[in-house]
Image 1 (cartoon, rainbow, N blue to C red):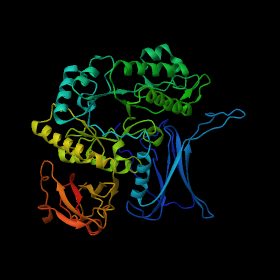
Image 2: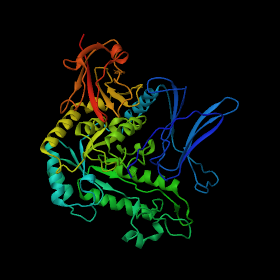
Image 3: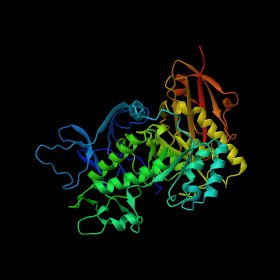
Image 4: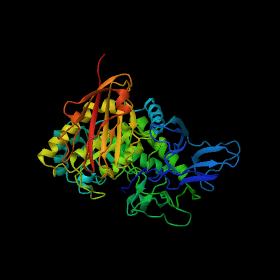
Length: 519
């Protein structure tokens, strides 16, 4: 369900133990994600910091302990249930990777994680294609004529990938071929770890359902969980997926996981099975990647419920949240990038009225939040006006022209004194250009918005800064004088004193481009 994944929590720690456990059988939308310990009042731009992440998609724990003798310890690992791992003589247990980082400021820590991920051989190297996902456009009401119309409209605005979401099963097999004929990549939704109680597989193989001994499996969302650690069950699921991937030209899988693992007993003895289930899930991903090396996989779990470096070793993108409200996404994207670089974050432009919160936002605000990730669209384009589709095409073109820099540059986030304002951006690795976003989240308590600082630029170079006004100036904006012709200033001034900021209405954004001058 849509929520506000990765909402930060902050506290001071006295002598004793602070411990966060995840017992959902997956990372969880409420996982501790990253545990930081640092100097008092650390922020994005300053403060000594240590960070820890457990790269595991099952039960896990993070903890910080301060001893009475003065030592301080960060720790993490897999959270094993009683009897979950039993070692015979000579056997060994190997836990998940624990990643640590040190930096001065949260941005420094985040950039270290980003550089590590971008240095992997399997990191996506091709431009991240603009995606149309039809979930919020049609939900379960799949009609080939409607889907074809959506694909045609998407083509007109520059969409490069068409993704058929939940509800396709049992429908026409011509859709993947049709999407290819329209000249786009095709993606398909799967939820291979789950089964409906009223399904052939559940009726034929009740022994394949995770359940505590002597009791039926616990149902949630009309779903039961299949025991991937059972070799026969595993082979059945793998072969069923491969049959579809072999039959159709599918280049992308949205892999969903919509419920927690409760009373998850596995095997003949029904011992706790989350550990074995997680390893089997990884093995299935690895097999599919080996068999289909060009296949891209997105990790989704009711939104951002399975986001960790264990699953990202085997997938190409994560879905941040089922909540696409751009106001909430400003916060979620801000903190998801603490670990995950922008090119691995699914960020979509939805309809004007959020299906999760009911809030209404203009297209500029929705798109300005989405272009800083892997851009997609999740909107019934038939309901959009001609002007809206034309403006959306401009945003798609803007994204395509800037995704190379946005997906390779350095993340910057500003410690702005006003909590009603968010400033963030990406600076090219060579310092030649940057794109920053200035957002009014709410009405400020102050009369004026203060200064707009653009950190991360080369202090010795001079930059021309101009506003990016796709669709025009947002209504009601009081623009500073320098907007007319832009301004040229050294990077040291832009990152320090900054510029006069515009006065925006709540829930509006302005993007700024900074370009280094020659000489």
